[in-house]
Length: 348
Ligand code: ATP
Ligand code: MG
Ligand code: MG
Image 1: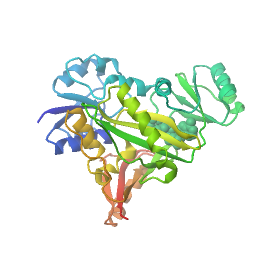
Image 2: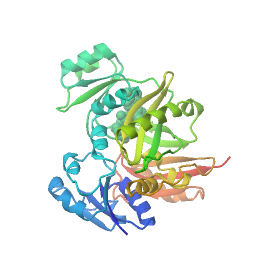
Image 3: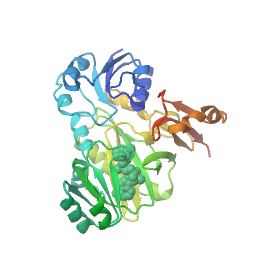
């Protein structure tokens, strides 16, 4: 079979590689770690840390197509590859990497994010608070994940006291939401677009804890409008692969939070819960194959992340025969680290 190149060595890459193997593809991982959990299930592994840009074209030369499972990689060397197709297109990565670019882009397409303003100084922050108000959240524009690089600001006094990090920031108004959900779409090379059922996503300490399908009515009512925005985003970016948009369900309709140009944690339930999971559909899309059905197979599914020490309770988890346990093979549990997940299907 042909070789798929994956940038990034985490659990998302691992699950893409496992789906790719089922379809007869080999994967080649490009990641800075000496050992990565994606490389463990792949045919080849190249360390990127010594020189990401210089090594990239040699890595890509072995691959029929290059994709990514991690957003925080420099875009320019990827965009310059030329000979080897990169899906989703590097422009999607570039847009999603910067919260300011992402929210501006989505606003232009008719989407509604929380009110936002760029912040590069204390004066910018005080001005943003005057116009947007408090409470709000100050976020780094780049490199944030799992709620890292965020500061909640309850009052102007909080803002005065805050020592700003030396990086580009964005201030967002705090959204009063009923629930959070995601739209996970997959767009094929031929423009065919399909959606998985939207999960109700519950976070703990800024990290996804639980995804549940079907979502309650307060979410499902807002899914059509959210999908419409996802379709516009996908078309504007000539998108190929799985695309995720996160939303808040509010009294005024879906408020866009952020997008991920990749498979997503809130779609892990699709491995058992959908006819064709997000990882296989991503592989099908980037390899130019027809997409599989995204239908949910039973009444629904629930996925719980195993974070930090929780992963050590795996024997207890398996004691319930309905549980599907996924462990990522990560060595040491650190607080907040995603070690695995459990999915159970529901029947009605
Ligand atoms: P991810 O791991 O999903 O990439 P992230 O670090 O990019 O996370 P966000 O998605 O921006 O972070 O925020 C994490 C969580 O914090 C959200 O899912 C939501 O629960 C809460 N949150 C973020 N921004 C807002 C907001 N403007 N109003 C209310 N809650 C918010
Ligand atoms: Mg994010
Ligand atoms: Mg998020």
